[in-house]
Image (cartoon, rainbow, N blue to C red; front, top):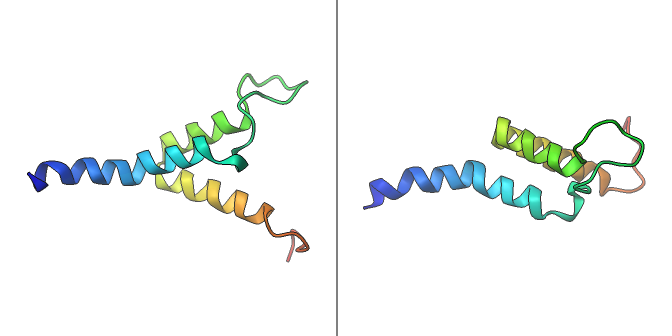
Length: 78
């Protein structure tokens, strides 16, 4: 029984949980694109695609990108 459950747990841990985090996070950006842009997708839809394609690496990119924004007072080059 545990042998049948292990692949599903790994799949959920590497793809499901990061995907859930990106879709539910407040820092993911809006679903709709900003006005005046030609792209039909918003920032959050882009992050979802990145996580779908890259898996845990896409999720780490999301976390690192949004982690930088939360530290006020630091310059981008520091």
